[in-house]
Length: 73
Figure 1 (cartoon, rainbow, N blue to C red):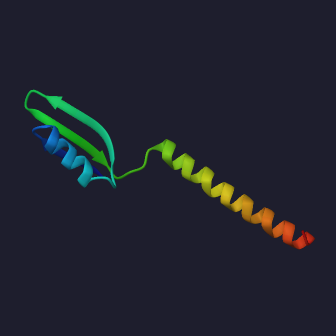
Figure 2 (cartoon, rainbow, N blue to C red):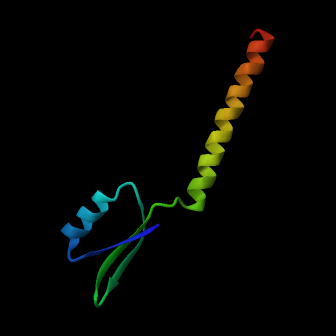
Figure 3 (cartoon, rainbow, N blue to C red):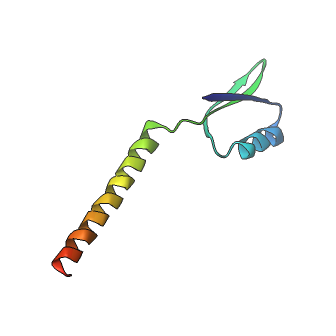
């Protein structure tokens, strides 16, 4: 989902960013009609790939521990 917030100054901008720490800031529009921050709650592909790689390492380490325990090491 995409979230769009209008801000009027740097103090307001900072407050919006702090209030949306659980989201990813993907755009900052500075237009004649106003300034807008665009957030998303969907992870980027790079973040998803890193998470998958981290999970693979956890599984591989667990399998190594099981194998070593079966060998009595």
